[in-house]
Image (cartoon, rainbow, N blue to C red; front, side):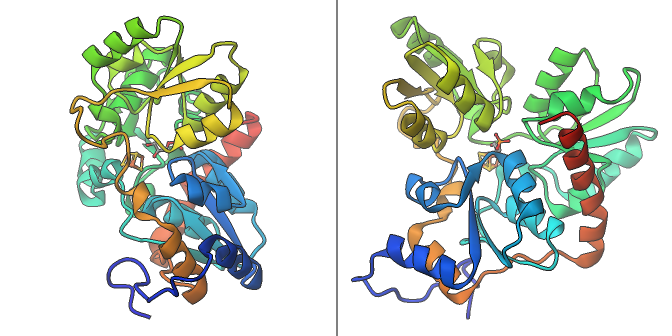
Length: 326
Ligand code: 13P
Ligand code: SF4
């Protein structure tokens, strides 16, 4: 089957009920669907598990089914494949990349590490397998603080690739990690001025901010955290209104879990764009998921030497997280 486009481009009978067919295929193939909170709502609704990057890695590590369909972006599929080398790991559209991962090419990161000898390398999970292979320990936005704090205060640390998450962790831990200058195009576009205006319009609303956002937005937040942490905060809070500064997909689960509360997407700088959508995450569609399960393509492959090196910092992250009860 040709997957040059990044997905299986086979014709689909238009009379099919795709949701039912996907559920049937999933059983037939003994496959498990994992979906990130940024996926389209209809994909999240079909998933066996939905979660943030940490949860998806933790679930992938313990899954027994022979086929994992990772509805997320490419690095998430790679992480699952590295953790489960004997399983078939599928991503409906392998062109679902990540601007943050792309902002840190492995060869340039390697030079950066050489320029900073004696440093421990901590990388965000939003990286290619090649960057993971150069890393001592991985983090996600759920565990970055605790993992950084698990090192002695005087440890010299390189943190990559997200300068915003790195700055945020420096600010709350008092560390002075050397940061790679990368960022996510979705989280960098929220407008400070418009968010301040929106807060005036909704004075009782809590502002929920992902730490990939710029510092100017982070400092205004009532809660800074991973997608899962923002969701939990919204569920547990007595507040009725929330302004959400992260990718729009999380609103689906927030609205499902809190049907009586109001969620307002934080405004982007450019009022005319759909910038709160991650164009990569949204490449996965029901049609591509259906064909992916039907033809068991496209598969995620990771060079075995790279995978062997990359598994060490991923496993280290999972071990520390387990020890800390995360
Ligand atoms: P989470 O760690 O919250 O899943 O974030 C992943 C991501 O890609 C944020 O842009
Ligand atoms: Fe990458 Fe940003 Fe999309 Fe997350 S939202 S997958 S960091 S491009």
